[in-house]
Image (cartoon, rainbow over all chains, first blue to last red; front, side, top):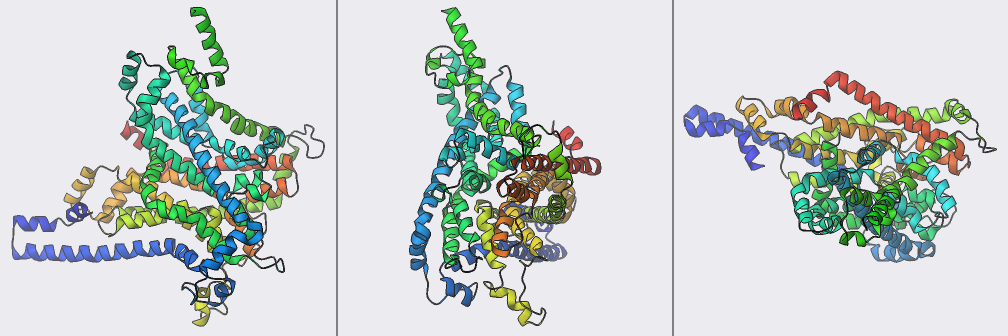
Length: 315
Length: 323
């Protein structure tokens, strides 16, 4: 920032070379113009940040209110009496206590999918980048081609196929389709081509280690940063997924948070169907966002790098 | 020995799955080709079962009769073409896309250039804040916004009424405005994601070029417009394409808005397909509808690329420059 900032005000450097009065005045003017522009720029950025953060702020404030407070207190201010404790208790007990299953399921789906998808995509991407085997081009073409297929177009036939396999309403039914992550394979092949020098793998071969040993001992450590990125992308993707589990799951105890909370939300405007679960939906949303909210500052650079790597090289 | 190894190799190639459990391949010398297949096979098997099979199945299914299950050619497609409600959902999303995608990409470009300029403080914080909605599930984003746009819950919506500008509290979720409310939500979710991709891409613009521009007296605005933006135009094209695809697939957010504001369960094409398959149980027609939607998506993407290529020489010049 400071380096760019200084470079942007060239008069200040000419000032040092010829310290005349007019040059000094010009330097002052440029600096004050720079300050004005920075104030404007920062204000615009701040406005955009308010648009982004205000709803999150509201969500957290609203999660401290009970139904009455939600409808009768200032929207963006906490109510006089915080109802977090009772909301938490309700969240885990109301409607048969399903919420704890949803939370647990979301963790199971996301951890298993992210772990396995990272393993599968890394192996495949590495092989595509480092081995010249027959059929390699076909596989690579398939991977790139499937990036263009809108995956939601596959959900209906997937439902029917899984119905035949008996996979409906099972964990594997949700996890297995999510392991097919062509973008991850593509990302990993780019990353491996970049991060693992052929000479290193060749050296391992000369030393007599087999291909898999060479992969595990030599290449895997070098691929680690890419694998972290891939893990995070698939974890967030699975945690946030809604359409696929909605279609493939029927029993409430198998739902992830997204499907469960949307089921609660769908009952909000049904008049007379018991007490609407406003505070529970809101607090449930906080719970499902909170882990990310806390971890995000640490993860941001890994995630952004992966997305951008694919985008820039990937056109 | 030689021969048996050969046959083992052959069987590995034909049935790649056997190689994955073969620890023995660590001890015996493995050919690179064998290792290549062994490493790709877990993905390939999953790909065949959960990607290619449904893909082909949806095409086969779309050619079958909903009633008898027999082959009926393009009957279902005729039904799709003649279905006004399906096309009104498609047209609604096209309208949505033209406004929302344009606005969002402009916002993303503007914020990325701002954070890449010397005229902003706290860049790290802003970059983090803008990207954050990526970690919020679409469902949660929709619930959150639906509550915020609901006059009963959000008393900020009464401000124009109290100031005498409006006759009653604003209701962005009324049928007339809900499409724009949806735009607001989707922009909230994805503008920062697109900005992040652009911002990282902008860091690859060589600093020497910008430096020499500054020495020649170019303003920061001129640098942004004439040097930075042209150099990341491929990234702009990329994020626009993913946004177009995303728009045509919109599902989660309108589903939630329907729960809270009753906008109908066939508001977008994807909802329409879901409804056909799971409310009416007409999987054959739903398959045809999804094939048509996929074709529309491909056509929209191709049209966008075509316009970009003609107008801005979006690819030729840059590709020539890079290699």
